[in-house]
Structures are given as C-alpha cells and as structure tokens.
Image 1 (cartoon, helix red, strand yellow):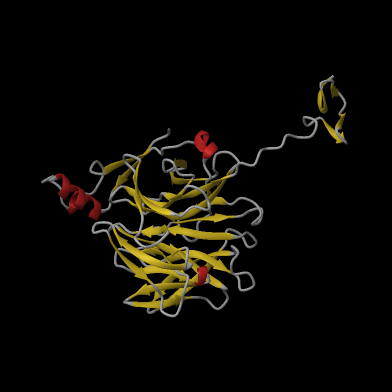
Image 2 (image 1 turned 90 degrees about the vertical axis):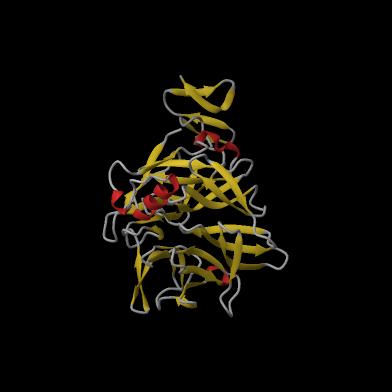
Length: 364
C-alpha cells in the first residue's frame, strides 16, 4: 500500500507532544523544520479489496487516496480527522439496512474502536474537533426520533442537541470553542449554535443552507439548495461572520455545474465536489487553494467509485467515502465489431461470425 507522511506543525500540537514525551528542550518556539511529528497514512484496504464492500472511507493526501474499511463491515465513511490525536472518526454499518455505528480510527495502527451511544439504534458521527469532542446524529428507529449529540471522548459523556421547536435534526461539526453547526427537518433548515443560542443559517435566494463543516475562524461551508428543489445539489456556499450577521456566498466551479463545498481549513483552503455531467453522473473531488483559485481536480482510480467528501483537515487532507458500484460491465455487442440482428451478429468488414457463438464477431 502507498504510504504518505504528515507532519504536525501547529504550536498547540507540538506543545502537547513535547509535554507527553517529557522533552525538556521543547517550547512554543521549537516549531519548525526538523521538529515535526510524523504521522504515516497507509490505509488498510486497496481497490482490489472492494469486491465485498458497499462503501469505503478515504483520506486524500497530496494526490493519493488512502482507503479504510472497518473489519467485518460492508460500509465505512470517514467524517472527521483529529490531527493532534492522530485519529479519524466516522460511521460504519454492515448493510444499508443495518444500524449505523460510530468509530474512532487510530491512523498510526489502523485499529478501529466502536462508538455506540446508549439508548439509540443509530450513531452517525458527522464531525469532531481536536479536543476529542464528537458530534453527529442519534436515531431511535421505533420512534423515528433523530437529534444531534456531542460526545466527549475523554469522559465518555454524551449531551443531546435539540433546537427548540424543531425535529429530525443533527449536529454536523464543532469548533474547539464549542460553536456548532447542524440542521433540522431532515436537512431543510441549517443552524449555528453559539453563545448558548441557536441561529438560523439562511439566505433569501436559497431553499436551504445545509452546513457540513466549520473552521476555527467560524467560516462555514456546505450545500446550497435552490427554492424549487432544495433537496438537490445546486451550489456550494460559505458563510462568514460580519459583526453579528452571517454573510453567505454561493459557489460553483462553473455557472451550470452542480457543486458542493464540503470542507475548509484555517488558512482558507476548500474542498468539494462537482457534477460535470449533471446529477445523473458521478461527481469529481476538487480543492481550492483559496476562494478565487482555479479548482484542482483529484480523480479516483477506476470508474466504479462515486465519492462523497465529508471534510478537510487543516493540513490539507480531504476525507470522506466512496460508494462502490458493483454493476457488471456489459461487453460491446459482437465484441465491438458488428451489431446484433436478433441473437446473431452482422459483422464488420474483416470480421466473421464466431462458429461457436453467433453473438460474437472474430477476425476473418
């Protein structure tokens, strides 16, 4: 498997690492070349292992996709990365009809640890910060009750997140200062929670704003739905604070191409998806060095993988999952050298009907 090495360079990460390793020479001024902490990505599956999988998680690092699958599970998605702990978070399930289970993935050992919240059937992790606070959707199937949650990894405690007067919600991300984003009404209404209160995330020209990720600078990215079909992919958006108001801007890679913005970094990079052939086709992963940059595309290996981006880490990693299409590839009629009349081939010049297979043309 291909490996890549990430080096942690944030001051807080180095400070924590130095304290844990009892390196007396370390201090805040020690951040720099030669003092970074290596974190190697290797993945635990490759494309050739996908025959029995419905979906696999991925982390994209400097043009290379690293794939992950929880042992014994049919579907895996990576929805958050904690660079300081060297872990990823996400959800997994055996089949599309199974209950979702959260997980914590140690990126150094590729070992998975399950997260099952008490009293619920489905635990879907949507986001996390670098303090071990994890957010997502909790669901009780018998009552169809869905709500957001905040899980504290260090203590194992869980708090419900419910916007008063609204139902069917989830929390999608959280900053280290505790600002949260999420949605209600199955995603029709986006919100921000800060200073102890919920705020509607909206724009007069949008049918909905579905927040996916929020940076430590409180810049939000997500999906903008048009009023006539708010549930479809239309534009990506970013929302930034100006005083006490959220300034919302839409984004498309080009005017007529459906686009989403799914991740961003502290330094103003972005990641998302666009559908060059319309929503009936497969999307392409792209990144932006800044808001005005030309999109850089990141094709997946093969043609059977359909990506969804769940976020972007501050070191530039893009993470999410791929849906794996197991539809058999149909061979061309008559081996590509003729056309069928009923069950028999009329072959092109230079080819004749195979005496053992009337539906195939072979060289004359």
